[in-house]
Amino acid sequence: MSMKLPRGTQDILPGNSEKWQYIEENLKDLCNRYNYKEIRTPLFEHTELFQRGVGDTTDIVQKEMYTFEDRGGRSLTLRPEGTASVVRSFVENKLFGLPNQPTKLFYIGPMFRYERPQQGRTRQFVQFGIEALGSADPGVDAEVLALAMSAYQEFGLKSLKLVINSLGDTESRESHRQALVNHFDPHREELCADCQVRLDKNPLRVLDCKKDRNHPAMATAPSILEHLNEYSRNYFEQVKANLDTMGINYVVDKNLVRGLDYYNHTAFEIMSDAEGFGAITTLSGGGRYNGLVEEIGGPETPGIGFALSIERLLMALEAEGIELPLDDALDCYFIAIGEEAEKQALKLTYELRKSGIQVDKDYMQRKMKAQFKAADRYNAKYVLILGENELAEQKINVKNMDTGDQVQIAFENITEHMKKELAGGE
Image 1 (cartoon, one colour):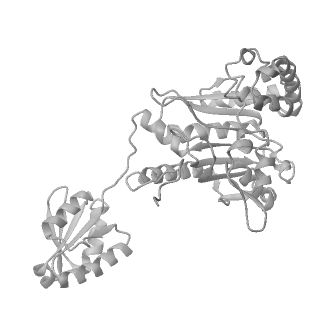
Image 2: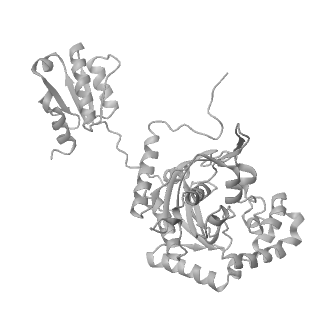
């Protein structure tokens, strides 16, 4: 029997995992500057959380969730997205009662969706996202949009387009909902089976259909912007004004609705215009979800957030030819010749590592020449050489692999010497 990788998943191997680490650490640093704190939620939740939180008319709930029954007969689902879990934790742990509001959170972790695997879209993928809960200030919307754009720009990406729209408040959405029903009802039989159901349950989702996107009725569908009440119009204008103040470019797309049921007011996507990026240009998206906290059992609490796929971020970097500034050089490689030298090298390697210095050594019983070749493959900055003569003198030959310079350092001084050298000789 052949054991192979499950379809739609990937192994992230050394040489590639360093890119992920670099991206994740920089995203965490970005969140720290915006004062967002990390939250970690379970990989699976009760299925009802996603049915209520994400929406039972979405493709995610209807077609893409990995749902199973545990031994106690409970229906559980591997999380397909992060917001519902974060909001559940926000409610369950009463974070709304903390004195510092809004509650600003970020997460990084795997999500699971059963969909057709393709470039940049896998069944297990890693998502980074933020959620700001507790404020209905348009300034928070602008902050989230700014953070989202920075999440790409700080890695050097330039071919970006921010697309925004307003989905309005409950009153505006109801007015738009009725207008959509009136518009699409004469074409009901021409729409796909999913849209025929959506037309009754959530007609806004019809605008997001991939099958019917080229139907003539789509081009003439009533815009939500035509049905915004005064409050919703003013809210959207303030969001745009804040973006203008920060100098963040954007495009208003009246047909942008996003794929989840819980959005209202601000909705947005960030797209890549890079040549060769692929047919699916969306990098990330998000929006405001006033009402979601109440749906999950909490008090009335406004919220807004966004999420991005690390896989698609890596694709965008590749499309623009951007190399991440990774430092893959090894600090030190220890070469020891002889049984007694090996014992001393083991002791000194342990001491160097405890002091915070990155060290490796030979475990293949290779000759000195082969060990030097190994040091080159590891791109070692320094090679520490210990043979019979050095052992007798209680000293180590330290070779700078960049300059070729060599010095002898006493055993008891090697840790401080290497610290100084690696710090630039200061």
